[in-house]
Length: 378
Length: 205
Image 1 (cartoon, helix red, strand yellow):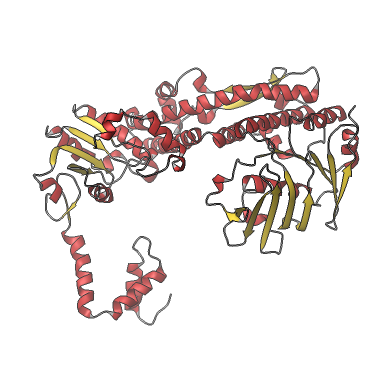
Image 2: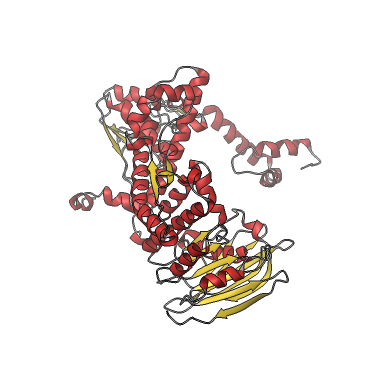
Protein backbone atom coordinates (compact mmCIF):
# COMPACT_ATOMS: atom_id res chain seq x y z
CA UNK A 1 0.00 0.00 0.00
CA UNK A 2 1.29 3.43 -0.78
CA UNK A 3 1.04 6.80 0.89
CA UNK A 4 -0.99 8.92 -1.46
CA UNK A 5 -1.74 12.59 -0.93
CA UNK A 6 -4.81 13.50 -2.92
CA UNK A 7 -4.89 17.10 -1.92
CA UNK A 8 -2.49 19.55 -0.38
CA UNK A 9 -3.26 23.02 0.89
CA UNK A 10 -0.96 25.63 2.32
CA UNK A 11 -1.80 28.81 4.17
CA UNK A 12 0.93 31.34 4.94
CA UNK A 13 3.56 28.64 4.72
CA UNK A 14 6.98 30.05 3.77
CA UNK A 15 6.53 32.10 0.59
CA UNK A 16 3.04 30.76 -0.15
CA UNK A 17 0.15 32.99 0.92
CA UNK A 18 -2.37 30.38 -0.13
CA UNK A 19 -2.11 27.33 -2.34
CA UNK A 20 -4.34 24.38 -3.03
CA UNK A 21 -3.32 21.43 -5.18
CA UNK A 22 -4.87 18.19 -6.36
CA UNK A 23 -2.00 15.76 -6.64
CA UNK A 24 -1.85 12.89 -9.08
CA UNK A 25 -1.34 9.29 -7.95
CA UNK A 26 2.07 8.82 -9.56
CA UNK A 27 4.43 11.48 -10.80
CA UNK A 28 3.90 15.13 -9.91
CA UNK A 29 6.30 17.71 -11.29
CA UNK A 30 6.64 21.23 -9.92
CA UNK A 31 8.42 23.57 -12.28
CA UNK A 32 9.16 27.28 -12.41
CA UNK A 33 11.90 29.82 -11.82
CA UNK A 34 13.96 30.03 -8.62
CA UNK A 35 12.16 31.46 -5.62
CA UNK A 36 8.62 30.56 -6.67
CA UNK A 37 8.23 28.05 -3.82
CA UNK A 38 8.59 24.64 -5.44
CA UNK A 39 10.70 23.22 -2.66
CA UNK A 40 8.32 24.67 -0.07
CA UNK A 41 5.53 22.50 -1.51
CA UNK A 42 7.67 19.42 -0.88
CA UNK A 43 8.53 20.66 2.58
CA UNK A 44 4.81 20.99 3.32
CA UNK A 45 4.40 17.30 2.53
CA UNK A 46 7.45 16.56 4.70
CA UNK A 47 5.78 18.44 7.55
CA UNK A 48 2.56 16.48 7.21
CA UNK A 49 4.46 13.22 7.13
CA UNK A 50 7.14 13.76 9.77
CA UNK A 51 5.79 16.73 11.76
CA UNK A 52 8.79 18.88 10.91
CA UNK A 53 10.63 20.65 8.14
CA UNK A 54 13.35 18.88 6.20
CA UNK A 55 15.42 22.04 6.15
CA UNK A 56 14.90 24.04 9.31
CA UNK A 57 14.37 22.75 12.83
CA UNK A 58 12.59 25.93 14.00
CA UNK A 59 8.89 25.74 13.21
CA UNK A 60 8.44 29.50 13.54
CA UNK A 61 10.72 30.08 10.57
CA UNK A 62 8.20 28.42 8.30
CA UNK A 63 5.58 31.09 8.97
CA UNK A 64 5.32 33.41 6.00
CA UNK A 65 7.16 36.68 6.50
CA UNK A 66 4.98 39.24 8.26
CA UNK A 67 2.29 36.71 9.23
CA UNK A 68 1.45 35.14 12.60
CA UNK A 69 0.76 31.53 11.71
CA UNK A 70 0.77 28.87 9.05
CA UNK A 71 -1.61 26.02 8.38
CA UNK A 72 -0.99 22.96 6.27
CA UNK A 73 -3.59 20.41 5.29
CA UNK A 74 -3.25 17.19 3.43
CA UNK A 75 -5.90 14.73 2.35
CA UNK A 76 -4.71 11.16 2.12
CA UNK A 77 -6.40 8.46 0.12
CA UNK A 78 -6.87 5.46 2.38
CA UNK A 79 -8.74 2.16 1.93
CA UNK A 80 -11.32 3.18 4.55
CA UNK A 81 -11.87 6.60 3.04
CA UNK A 82 -9.95 9.85 3.08
CA UNK A 83 -7.90 10.94 6.08
CA UNK A 84 -7.23 14.61 6.72
CA UNK A 85 -4.00 15.74 8.31
CA UNK A 86 -3.51 19.28 9.54
CA UNK A 87 -0.51 20.99 11.00
CA UNK A 88 -0.52 24.52 12.31
CA UNK A 89 2.06 26.70 13.96
CA UNK A 90 1.29 30.03 15.56
CA UNK A 91 4.00 32.32 16.80
CA UNK A 92 4.58 31.87 20.53
CA UNK A 93 2.38 28.76 20.56
CA UNK A 94 3.18 25.13 20.30
CA UNK A 95 2.69 23.16 17.13
CA UNK A 96 -0.74 21.60 16.72
CA UNK A 97 -1.01 18.41 14.71
CA UNK A 98 -4.36 16.88 13.91
CA UNK A 99 -5.70 13.83 12.18
CA UNK A 100 -9.31 14.10 11.13
CA UNK A 101 -9.63 17.19 13.33
CA UNK A 102 -8.50 15.36 16.42
CA UNK A 103 -5.24 16.44 17.96
CA UNK A 104 -2.55 13.84 18.51
CA UNK A 105 -1.53 13.26 22.11
CA UNK A 106 2.00 12.58 21.01
CA UNK A 107 3.60 13.43 17.69
CA UNK A 108 5.39 10.08 17.84
CA UNK A 109 2.00 8.42 17.31
CA UNK A 110 1.92 10.03 13.88
CA UNK A 111 5.52 9.85 12.70
CA UNK A 112 6.08 6.77 10.57
CA UNK A 113 2.45 6.10 9.70
CA UNK A 114 2.60 8.00 6.44
CA UNK A 115 6.31 8.01 5.69
CA UNK A 116 8.14 10.25 3.23
CA UNK A 117 11.63 10.22 1.79
CA UNK A 118 13.24 13.41 0.50
CA UNK A 119 16.24 13.80 -1.79
CA UNK A 120 17.77 17.27 -2.09
CA UNK A 121 21.08 18.83 -3.15
CA UNK A 122 21.82 19.29 0.58
CA UNK A 123 22.27 15.53 0.85
CA UNK A 124 25.63 16.08 -0.83
CA UNK A 125 27.00 16.72 2.64
CA UNK A 126 26.63 12.99 3.28
CA UNK A 127 29.53 12.50 0.89
CA UNK A 128 31.49 15.68 1.40
CA UNK A 129 31.42 16.23 5.13
CA UNK A 130 32.78 14.45 8.18
CA UNK A 131 31.77 11.09 9.57
CA UNK A 132 29.30 12.61 12.03
CA UNK A 133 26.83 13.43 9.24
CA UNK A 134 26.88 9.84 8.02
CA UNK A 135 26.50 8.41 11.53
CA UNK A 136 23.51 10.70 12.09
CA UNK A 137 21.95 9.53 8.81
CA UNK A 138 22.38 5.84 9.65
CA UNK A 139 21.37 6.25 13.30
CA UNK A 140 18.25 8.21 12.34
CA UNK A 141 17.10 5.45 10.02
CA UNK A 142 17.74 2.64 12.48
CA UNK A 143 16.30 4.45 15.49
CA UNK A 144 13.08 5.23 13.65
CA UNK A 145 12.12 1.59 13.83
CA UNK A 146 14.13 0.35 16.79
CA UNK A 147 13.50 1.94 20.16
CA UNK A 148 16.08 -0.33 21.80
CA UNK A 149 18.74 0.99 19.45
CA UNK A 150 17.78 4.59 20.15
CA UNK A 151 17.94 3.99 23.89
CA UNK A 152 21.34 2.31 23.65
CA UNK A 153 22.67 5.12 21.47
CA UNK A 154 21.45 7.83 23.84
CA UNK A 155 22.85 6.03 26.85
CA UNK A 156 26.15 5.47 25.06
CA UNK A 157 26.47 9.16 24.25
CA UNK A 158 25.60 10.17 27.78
CA UNK A 159 28.01 7.70 29.37
CA UNK A 160 30.67 8.98 26.96
CA UNK A 161 30.13 12.53 28.19
CA UNK A 162 30.42 11.43 31.82
CA UNK A 163 33.59 9.53 31.03
CA UNK A 164 35.14 12.47 29.19
CA UNK A 165 34.35 14.76 32.12
CA UNK A 166 36.21 12.33 34.37
CA UNK A 167 39.20 12.15 32.01
CA UNK A 168 39.35 15.93 31.95
CA UNK A 169 39.15 16.09 35.72
CA UNK A 170 41.95 13.53 36.06
CA UNK A 171 44.14 15.78 33.93
CA UNK A 172 43.27 18.91 35.89
CA UNK A 173 43.43 17.51 39.38
CA UNK A 174 45.93 14.73 38.88
CA UNK A 175 45.34 11.15 39.86
CA UNK A 176 42.49 9.12 38.48
CA UNK A 177 42.46 5.41 37.90
CA UNK A 178 41.10 2.94 35.45
CA UNK A 179 38.98 1.71 38.33
CA UNK A 180 37.16 5.04 38.66
CA UNK A 181 36.14 4.75 35.02
CA UNK A 182 35.02 1.15 35.31
CA UNK A 183 31.31 1.74 35.94
CA UNK A 184 31.18 3.97 32.86
CA UNK A 185 33.28 1.62 30.77
CA UNK A 186 30.86 -1.15 31.66
CA UNK A 187 27.92 0.93 30.36
CA UNK A 188 29.82 2.01 27.27
CA UNK A 189 30.78 -1.56 26.44
CA UNK A 190 27.22 -2.86 26.70
CA UNK A 191 25.66 -0.06 24.65
CA UNK A 192 28.50 0.07 22.10
CA UNK A 193 27.88 -3.60 21.34
CA UNK A 194 24.19 -2.88 20.66
CA UNK A 195 25.01 0.11 18.45
CA UNK A 196 27.71 -1.76 16.53
CA UNK A 197 25.46 -4.75 15.96
CA UNK A 198 22.58 -2.49 14.90
CA UNK A 199 24.66 -0.54 12.40
CA UNK A 200 26.23 -3.66 10.95
CA UNK A 201 22.89 -5.40 10.47
CA UNK A 202 21.34 -2.27 8.99
CA UNK A 203 24.16 -1.74 6.50
CA UNK A 204 24.05 -5.38 5.47
CA UNK A 205 20.46 -4.73 4.45
CA UNK A 206 21.03 -1.29 2.95
CA UNK A 207 24.13 -1.96 0.85
CA UNK A 208 22.74 -4.40 -1.77
CA UNK A 209 19.80 -2.04 -2.30
CA UNK A 210 22.11 0.91 -2.93
CA UNK A 211 24.13 -1.13 -5.42
CA UNK A 212 21.03 -2.26 -7.21
CA UNK A 213 19.65 1.25 -7.56
CA UNK A 214 23.00 2.66 -8.65
CA UNK A 215 23.18 0.09 -11.42
CA UNK A 216 19.58 0.77 -12.35
CA UNK A 217 20.19 4.48 -12.82
CA UNK A 218 23.70 4.51 -14.24
CA UNK A 219 23.67 1.28 -16.26
CA UNK A 220 27.34 2.14 -16.60
CA UNK A 221 30.43 0.01 -16.04
CA UNK A 222 31.36 1.48 -12.67
CA UNK A 223 30.51 -0.22 -9.40
CA UNK A 224 29.93 1.37 -6.04
CA UNK A 225 30.33 0.13 -2.50
CA UNK A 226 29.60 1.01 1.11
CA UNK A 227 32.02 0.06 3.81
CA UNK A 228 31.19 0.39 7.46
CA UNK A 229 34.32 0.70 9.58
CA UNK A 230 34.38 0.53 13.33
CA UNK A 231 37.12 -0.04 15.88
CA UNK A 232 34.76 -2.66 17.27
CA UNK A 233 35.21 -4.79 14.16
CA UNK A 234 38.53 -5.96 15.60
CA UNK A 235 38.09 -5.63 19.32
CA UNK A 236 35.21 -5.38 21.78
CA UNK A 237 34.69 -2.01 23.45
CA UNK A 238 35.74 -3.06 26.95
CA UNK A 239 39.17 -4.27 25.88
CA UNK A 240 39.52 -1.23 23.60
CA UNK A 241 38.92 1.08 26.54
CA UNK A 242 41.38 -0.80 28.72
CA UNK A 243 44.05 -0.87 26.03
CA UNK A 244 43.72 2.83 25.21
CA UNK A 245 43.55 3.99 28.82
CA UNK A 246 46.90 5.85 28.64
CA UNK A 247 46.08 7.45 25.33
CA UNK A 248 42.61 8.50 26.51
CA UNK A 249 44.08 9.97 29.66
CA UNK A 250 46.57 12.15 27.84
CA UNK A 251 44.03 13.13 25.19
CA UNK A 252 41.48 13.88 27.94
CA UNK A 253 38.70 12.24 25.97
CA UNK A 254 37.67 8.81 24.76
CA UNK A 255 39.61 8.27 21.56
CA UNK A 256 37.96 5.14 20.19
CA UNK A 257 34.49 3.66 20.12
CA UNK A 258 31.34 3.62 18.03
CA UNK A 259 31.28 7.42 18.26
CA UNK A 260 34.18 7.32 15.80
CA UNK A 261 32.63 4.86 13.32
CA UNK A 262 32.52 5.86 9.70
CA UNK A 263 30.75 4.79 6.58
CA UNK A 264 32.91 4.93 3.47
CA UNK A 265 31.39 5.37 0.03
CA UNK A 266 33.43 3.79 -2.74
CA UNK A 267 33.51 4.03 -6.52
CA UNK A 268 35.34 1.12 -8.10
CA UNK A 269 37.01 0.60 -4.74
CA UNK A 270 38.22 4.22 -4.40
CA UNK A 271 36.78 7.00 -2.24
CA UNK A 272 33.76 8.43 -4.02
CA UNK A 273 34.41 11.83 -2.46
CA UNK A 274 37.74 12.17 -4.26
CA UNK A 275 37.32 10.06 -7.36
CA UNK A 276 33.65 10.41 -8.23
CA UNK A 277 32.40 13.04 -10.67
CA UNK A 278 29.58 15.30 -9.50
CA UNK A 279 27.15 13.26 -11.55
CA UNK A 280 28.41 10.01 -10.07
CA UNK A 281 28.20 11.42 -6.55
CA UNK A 282 24.67 12.58 -7.20
CA UNK A 283 23.69 9.22 -8.66
CA UNK A 284 25.09 7.58 -5.55
CA UNK A 285 23.06 9.82 -3.25
CA UNK A 286 19.89 9.09 -5.17
CA UNK A 287 20.62 5.36 -4.98
CA UNK A 288 21.24 5.71 -1.24
CA UNK A 289 17.92 7.48 -0.71
CA UNK A 290 16.04 5.00 -2.88
CA UNK A 291 17.48 2.25 -0.67
CA UNK A 292 16.19 4.23 2.33
CA UNK A 293 12.82 4.23 0.57
CA UNK A 294 12.89 0.43 0.20
CA UNK A 295 13.76 -0.15 3.84
CA UNK A 296 11.15 2.31 5.09
CA UNK A 297 8.56 0.63 2.88
CA UNK A 298 9.55 -2.79 4.22
CA UNK A 299 9.45 -1.65 7.85
CA UNK A 300 6.18 0.29 7.71
CA UNK A 301 4.37 -1.74 5.08
CA UNK A 302 3.81 1.58 3.29
CA UNK A 303 5.48 3.00 0.23
CA UNK A 304 6.61 6.46 1.32
CA UNK A 305 5.97 9.59 -0.69
CA UNK A 306 9.20 10.12 -2.59
CA UNK A 307 10.33 13.69 -3.10
CA UNK A 308 13.12 14.74 -5.45
CA UNK A 309 14.07 18.34 -4.98
CA UNK A 310 16.07 19.87 -7.79
CA UNK A 311 18.40 16.92 -8.25
CA UNK A 312 18.81 16.70 -12.02
CA UNK A 313 21.68 19.13 -12.48
CA UNK A 314 24.88 17.32 -13.46
CA UNK A 315 22.90 14.18 -14.21
CA UNK A 316 23.16 13.13 -17.83
CA UNK A 317 19.91 12.76 -19.82
CA UNK A 318 20.22 9.01 -20.03
CA UNK A 319 20.55 8.57 -16.25
CA UNK A 320 17.67 10.97 -15.74
CA UNK A 321 15.58 8.89 -18.12
CA UNK A 322 16.52 5.65 -16.33
CA UNK A 323 15.63 7.19 -12.99
CA UNK A 324 12.25 8.46 -14.12
CA UNK A 325 11.39 5.17 -15.75
CA UNK A 326 12.24 3.44 -12.47
CA UNK A 327 10.16 5.86 -10.39
CA UNK A 328 6.93 5.16 -12.22
CA UNK A 329 7.48 1.45 -12.38
CA UNK A 330 5.26 0.23 -9.54
CA UNK A 331 8.14 -0.25 -7.12
CA UNK A 332 7.61 3.31 -5.95
CA UNK A 333 4.44 5.12 -5.01
CA UNK A 334 3.57 8.78 -5.23
CA UNK A 335 6.49 10.87 -6.44
CA UNK A 336 6.95 14.64 -6.20
CA UNK A 337 9.66 16.27 -8.30
CA UNK A 338 10.84 19.86 -8.55
CA UNK A 339 12.94 21.26 -11.37
CA UNK A 340 13.50 24.70 -12.83
CA UNK A 341 13.57 23.25 -16.31
CA UNK A 342 10.12 22.03 -17.37
CA UNK A 343 11.35 21.20 -20.87
CA UNK A 344 14.01 18.83 -19.58
CA UNK A 345 11.47 16.97 -17.42
CA UNK A 346 8.93 16.78 -20.22
CA UNK A 347 11.55 15.32 -22.48
CA UNK A 348 12.77 12.77 -19.95
CA UNK A 349 9.21 11.64 -19.22
CA UNK A 350 8.11 11.60 -22.83
CA UNK A 351 6.79 8.24 -23.88
CA UNK A 352 6.91 6.71 -20.40
CA UNK A 353 3.65 5.01 -19.41
CA UNK A 354 3.29 6.91 -16.14
CA UNK A 355 0.52 9.12 -14.85
CA UNK A 356 2.20 12.53 -14.87
CA UNK A 357 0.98 15.88 -13.65
CA UNK A 358 2.83 19.16 -14.08
CA UNK A 359 2.37 22.17 -11.83
CA UNK A 360 3.89 25.36 -13.18
CA UNK A 361 4.69 27.98 -10.55
CA UNK A 362 5.43 31.65 -11.16
CA UNK A 363 6.28 34.75 -9.17
CA UNK A 364 2.65 35.90 -9.16
CA UNK A 365 1.98 32.85 -6.97
CA UNK A 366 -0.30 31.15 -9.39
CA UNK A 367 0.01 27.44 -9.87
CA UNK A 368 -1.12 26.14 -13.23
CA UNK A 369 -1.87 22.44 -13.48
CA UNK A 370 -1.25 20.46 -16.64
CA UNK A 371 -2.10 16.79 -16.87
CA UNK A 372 0.02 14.91 -19.33
CA UNK A 373 -1.82 12.43 -21.49
CA UNK A 374 -0.85 8.93 -20.48
CA UNK A 375 1.25 7.59 -23.28
CA UNK A 376 0.27 4.29 -24.75
CA UNK A 377 2.32 1.50 -23.27
CA UNK A 378 5.17 0.76 -25.60
CA UNK B 1 9.71 44.41 41.11
CA UNK B 2 9.81 47.55 43.19
CA UNK B 3 7.63 47.86 46.28
CA UNK B 4 7.03 50.43 48.99
CA UNK B 5 8.72 48.27 51.61
CA UNK B 6 12.24 46.92 51.81
CA UNK B 7 10.98 44.32 54.32
CA UNK B 8 8.47 42.99 51.83
CA UNK B 9 11.07 43.04 49.11
CA UNK B 10 13.42 41.07 51.30
CA UNK B 11 10.83 38.40 52.13
CA UNK B 12 9.90 38.03 48.47
CA UNK B 13 13.53 37.57 47.58
CA UNK B 14 13.93 34.82 50.18
CA UNK B 15 10.76 32.98 49.20
CA UNK B 16 11.80 33.10 45.56
CA UNK B 17 14.91 31.07 46.39
CA UNK B 18 12.69 28.01 46.92
CA UNK B 19 12.52 25.50 44.06
CA UNK B 20 9.65 26.11 41.66
CA UNK B 21 8.84 29.53 43.11
CA UNK B 22 9.14 32.59 40.89
CA UNK B 23 9.01 36.19 42.06
CA UNK B 24 5.33 36.54 41.26
CA UNK B 25 4.35 33.55 43.40
CA UNK B 26 6.76 34.68 46.11
CA UNK B 27 4.96 38.02 46.24
CA UNK B 28 1.60 36.26 46.61
CA UNK B 29 3.00 34.17 49.44
CA UNK B 30 4.50 37.17 51.20
CA UNK B 31 1.25 39.12 51.01
CA UNK B 32 -0.64 36.11 52.31
CA UNK B 33 1.70 35.86 55.28
CA UNK B 34 1.16 39.56 55.97
CA UNK B 35 -2.59 39.08 56.08
CA UNK B 36 -2.38 36.35 58.76
CA UNK B 37 -2.29 37.04 62.48
CA UNK B 38 1.09 37.22 64.13
CA UNK B 39 0.86 33.92 66.04
CA UNK B 40 0.17 31.95 62.90
CA UNK B 41 3.20 33.40 61.13
CA UNK B 42 5.36 32.76 64.18
CA UNK B 43 4.31 29.11 64.13
CA UNK B 44 5.21 29.03 60.45
CA UNK B 45 8.65 30.56 60.78
CA UNK B 46 9.36 28.58 63.93
CA UNK B 47 8.69 25.32 62.14
CA UNK B 48 11.04 26.28 59.32
CA UNK B 49 13.75 27.31 61.77
CA UNK B 50 13.41 24.12 63.81
CA UNK B 51 13.39 22.01 60.68
CA UNK B 52 16.80 23.30 59.76
CA UNK B 53 18.24 23.45 63.26
CA UNK B 54 16.96 20.26 64.76
CA UNK B 55 16.61 17.72 61.99
CA UNK B 56 19.41 15.21 62.02
CA UNK B 57 20.43 12.44 59.74
CA UNK B 58 20.07 8.93 61.00
CA UNK B 59 23.44 7.52 61.97
CA UNK B 60 22.57 4.21 60.32
CA UNK B 61 20.65 4.86 57.13
CA UNK B 62 21.33 8.60 56.60
CA UNK B 63 17.59 9.25 56.32
CA UNK B 64 16.16 12.43 57.79
CA UNK B 65 15.39 11.86 61.45
CA UNK B 66 14.61 13.65 64.71
CA UNK B 67 16.86 11.40 66.75
CA UNK B 68 20.31 9.98 66.15
CA UNK B 69 18.59 6.83 64.99
CA UNK B 70 15.50 7.14 62.77
CA UNK B 71 12.19 5.49 63.55
CA UNK B 72 12.71 2.81 60.93
CA UNK B 73 16.21 1.83 62.05
CA UNK B 74 15.11 1.87 65.71
CA UNK B 75 12.11 -0.38 65.12
CA UNK B 76 12.51 -3.98 66.33
CA UNK B 77 9.67 -4.96 63.99
CA UNK B 78 11.81 -4.32 60.90
CA UNK B 79 14.07 -6.89 59.30
CA UNK B 80 17.58 -5.65 60.10
CA UNK B 81 19.17 -8.09 57.70
CA UNK B 82 17.65 -6.38 54.66
CA UNK B 83 18.82 -2.96 53.39
CA UNK B 84 17.22 -1.11 50.50
CA UNK B 85 19.47 1.47 48.81
CA UNK B 86 17.63 4.56 47.51
CA UNK B 87 18.64 7.89 46.04
CA UNK B 88 16.90 10.24 48.45
CA UNK B 89 14.26 10.70 51.15
CA UNK B 90 11.41 10.86 48.65
CA UNK B 91 12.14 7.30 47.58
CA UNK B 92 11.88 6.12 51.20
CA UNK B 93 8.44 7.72 51.40
CA UNK B 94 7.41 6.08 48.12
CA UNK B 95 8.52 2.62 49.21
CA UNK B 96 7.02 3.01 52.70
CA UNK B 97 3.69 3.83 51.07
CA UNK B 98 3.67 0.41 49.42
CA UNK B 99 3.53 -1.28 52.87
CA UNK B 100 5.34 -4.16 51.18
CA UNK B 101 8.79 -3.63 52.58
CA UNK B 102 9.78 -4.50 56.12
CA UNK B 103 13.55 -4.03 55.92
CA UNK B 104 15.77 -0.99 56.50
CA UNK B 105 16.95 1.68 54.09
CA UNK B 106 20.13 3.37 53.05
CA UNK B 107 19.80 6.88 51.60
CA UNK B 108 22.67 7.63 49.21
CA UNK B 109 21.91 11.30 48.73
CA UNK B 110 22.21 11.14 44.93
CA UNK B 111 23.64 9.05 42.11
CA UNK B 112 27.06 9.12 40.47
CA UNK B 113 27.07 11.76 37.74
CA UNK B 114 30.42 13.29 36.72
CA UNK B 115 28.67 15.80 34.45
CA UNK B 116 26.98 17.23 37.56
CA UNK B 117 30.18 16.96 39.55
CA UNK B 118 28.93 14.05 41.66
CA UNK B 119 31.39 11.23 42.27
CA UNK B 120 31.16 8.16 44.53
CA UNK B 121 32.94 10.07 47.29
CA UNK B 122 30.07 12.60 47.39
CA UNK B 123 27.54 9.88 48.23
CA UNK B 124 27.05 8.04 51.51
CA UNK B 125 28.66 4.90 50.22
CA UNK B 126 31.31 4.51 52.92
CA UNK B 127 28.57 4.32 55.58
CA UNK B 128 26.74 1.67 53.56
CA UNK B 129 29.91 -0.44 53.33
CA UNK B 130 30.41 -0.06 57.10
CA UNK B 131 26.89 -1.26 57.74
CA UNK B 132 27.37 -4.24 55.48
CA UNK B 133 30.80 -4.87 57.00
CA UNK B 134 29.27 -5.19 60.46
CA UNK B 135 27.92 -8.55 59.37
CA UNK B 136 24.28 -7.81 60.27
CA UNK B 137 23.15 -7.39 56.68
CA UNK B 138 22.02 -10.42 54.69
CA UNK B 139 20.82 -8.76 51.48
CA UNK B 140 21.13 -5.35 49.84
CA UNK B 141 18.29 -4.33 47.52
CA UNK B 142 19.27 -1.73 44.91
CA UNK B 143 16.29 0.54 44.25
CA UNK B 144 17.71 3.37 42.13
CA UNK B 145 16.06 4.99 39.12
CA UNK B 146 16.33 3.25 35.74
CA UNK B 147 18.47 6.04 34.29
CA UNK B 148 22.00 5.70 32.95
CA UNK B 149 23.34 7.30 36.14
CA UNK B 150 21.18 5.05 38.33
CA UNK B 151 22.38 1.95 36.49
CA UNK B 152 25.99 3.05 36.71
CA UNK B 153 25.67 3.66 40.44
CA UNK B 154 24.15 0.18 40.87
CA UNK B 155 27.08 -1.29 38.98
CA UNK B 156 29.54 0.59 41.19
CA UNK B 157 27.76 -0.47 44.38
CA UNK B 158 27.56 -4.06 43.26
CA UNK B 159 31.31 -4.10 42.71
CA UNK B 160 32.02 -2.60 46.12
CA UNK B 161 29.52 -4.85 47.92
CA UNK B 162 30.78 -8.01 46.27
CA UNK B 163 33.89 -7.95 48.46
CA UNK B 164 31.65 -8.30 51.51
CA UNK B 165 29.93 -11.43 50.33
CA UNK B 166 26.46 -9.98 50.83
CA UNK B 167 23.58 -10.88 48.51
CA UNK B 168 22.79 -8.00 46.13
CA UNK B 169 19.45 -7.75 44.35
CA UNK B 170 17.79 -5.12 42.18
CA UNK B 171 14.12 -4.13 42.10
CA UNK B 172 12.23 -5.53 39.09
CA UNK B 173 11.46 -3.38 36.07
CA UNK B 174 8.35 -4.02 34.10
CA UNK B 175 4.78 -3.18 33.31
CA UNK B 176 2.58 -1.43 35.81
CA UNK B 177 -0.23 -3.27 37.60
CA UNK B 178 -3.66 -2.82 36.01
CA UNK B 179 -2.17 -1.69 32.70
CA UNK B 180 -2.83 -2.89 29.18
CA UNK B 181 0.13 -4.29 27.33
CA UNK B 182 -0.52 -2.10 24.30
CA UNK B 183 0.04 1.06 26.30
CA UNK B 184 3.37 -0.04 27.74
CA UNK B 185 6.37 1.46 25.95
CA UNK B 186 8.26 -1.14 23.97
CA UNK B 187 11.50 -0.94 25.95
CA UNK B 188 9.74 -1.68 29.23
CA UNK B 189 7.68 -4.43 27.65
CA UNK B 190 10.80 -5.95 26.08
CA UNK B 191 12.50 -5.89 29.45
CA UNK B 192 9.51 -7.55 31.12
CA UNK B 193 9.63 -10.38 28.64
CA UNK B 194 13.39 -10.82 29.02
CA UNK B 195 13.05 -10.78 32.84
CA UNK B 196 10.01 -13.07 33.00
CA UNK B 197 9.71 -15.42 35.95
CA UNK B 198 8.06 -18.73 36.75
CA UNK B 199 4.32 -18.40 37.11
CA UNK B 200 4.26 -20.07 40.54
CA UNK B 201 6.39 -17.23 41.87
CA UNK B 202 4.02 -14.55 40.66
CA UNK B 203 0.81 -16.11 42.01
CA UNK B 204 2.28 -16.58 45.46
CA UNK B 205 1.91 -12.92 46.36
